[in-house]
Length: 109
Length: 128
Image 1: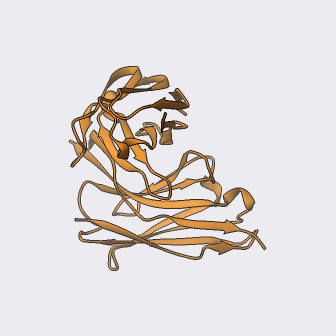
Image 2: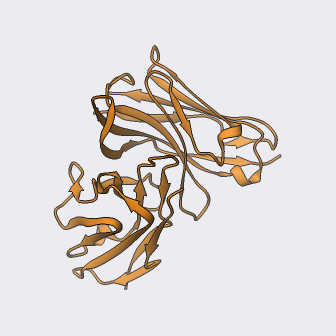
């Protein structure tokens, strides 16, 4: 099973600041298998990034992803009030199971 | 666009079977590149993948839950379902259904587009 470890656990930032979130895999991944989600309290996750770097439909360009191998990064270039949430990375699961990181909470400072 | 509507009881007794259904609207469950997942989230915790089913009924389950899970698909009603047997308090969680898109080329997986449509979530409590 591929373990995804996200860091930091919590990021305290102000609106307008840049957020950099890390996702490290326990073994090398095909970058096309890595996705990122945003989750707000009481809501289902929302797909942000697929293929490590492609934005999903309707996702603003302040969200960007990059990475390869075992190290992946989600960057939010200038935090908007609606971006304060929890972010999860996930890998496709080849072989299964699919796994998620434990999440990074981006909170308002 | 595709939407997912979950249904099922919010309270299940220990040792009984949890049954949830996810109805697909705005599209067909038989669409070529779509696969249908169940995921759960324990209170205040991260996400745990339960399993996935294809339009033809082919399933892949999380090994940690495999012995207790059955997933099924009904193309005539555009629904898919989850059954989790012998539940305990550790199965108390919010359960989500989700569509994922996976393309293939020559029968081999080509690209993974992630889980782009989610159900609203069902809070399931296991308690007597």
